[in-house]
Amino acid sequence: MPAINKPNQHFDVLTWTGTGGGSGATRTITGLNFQPDLIWEKARSSGTGHQLLDSVRGVGQNKVIASNSNAAQPNPPNTESLYGWLSAINSDGFTVTNGTSTFDNWNKSSDTYVAWNWKAGGTAVNNTSGTITSQVSVNTTAKFSIVKFSTGGAGNFTVGHGLGTTPGMITIKKLSGTGYWDLWHKSFTTPATEYMYLDLLNGVASDSRQWANAAPTDTVFSGESGYEFAANSDFIAYCWAEVAGYSKFGNYTGLSSSKVFVYTGFRPAYVLIKKTTEASTTYGWPVVDKSRPSGYNDTQELWVDQSVTGATSNYNIDLLSNGFCINATNNTNVNASGKNYIYAAFAEAPFKYANAR
Image (tube, rainbow, N blue to C red; front, side):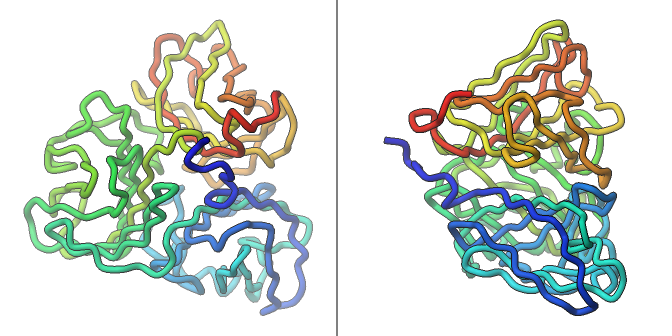
């Protein structure tokens, strides 16, 4: 039996249509089988940026960070009062509050929205595994943790992530000032030095200072204060590790003239992709999920590095019972000949229990 036979108790996708209403009106979005700790939301039908909030930093006005921007928390600054904000996390979803203007962020009338939701461990606790004490909320079953930490002066440091196993992917954002979304992935060729930016089109970069020349371990990840991790600054990290039948972090090689099938061992609810060997063109990080819209061969992608609206079937990615298929041929962002791509995938159902598509 898979370690997790009900993935929707740890990760799930919510979609809704805005109802508008007056300034200060609230709306509760439900449908989860858990209380979320990371809520990653995007307006599908408007160019509003991504909205990331979590239980460690807290919710409410001035708590937003955006995967499509390097700006500090909040991002964009001081607009939640105008366009709405996430005001509460609930046992099966969350509550949003309208701002004083058009409510674009969460609840504009007739606009469509999506939220990707992960369960961590609720209230954060101190983790002293690294040279820096971190505040960690961790789901040890689904291997997901939210890590808040502050750097000191210049020099190398380590931070405890709480997973108890080596991560498959980590993304880190500076909170107290501008800074790119630093990302580490287990499929990097040289994991001690390579990194990417979640908010940029760039391919893989390499510098021994990024991770202090040390790949993450089962207890910590590393960095150099004063390089990408500015000294005396606050950061938030989201860390995932693989769980068979639930999550997968891997890579594939594009074929250009042929479809590419990627085996995950489960029917994906969510897939994120990025070319590593060179910069992407126009849009860098496509993400598809089970709900936008549902149905075989009809998946609508968004891009975590962009605030643009979604587009249907540009990349034509099928979510299948045991993996996903890239149907787009000769598309440089997802299927260029000989190019390497990394991905992150989370399950709707393990292969054993997945209905065929």
